[in-house]
Length: 85
Image (tube, rainbow, N blue to C red; front, top):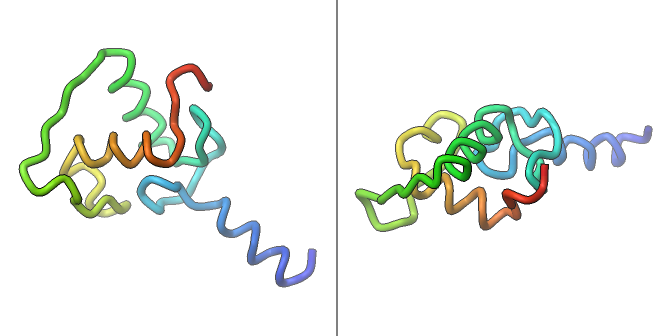
């Protein structure tokens, strides 16, 4: 691999939802184990979340658990679907 190819591969090493280290493609998006599990639980249990802020909370690996509503919205926005596993 050339350095430019290695740089491109690094993009796929990060979770599209929170930016943590990705473990693979889950439910149609490249995510970490944490976001995979969060999405799975949210969908299977039909959980309804609400945002205490303005529905634009920062979701990153350090703050991903602060707002479940915004985290789930990011999962959906980045292509996670319950019919993809």
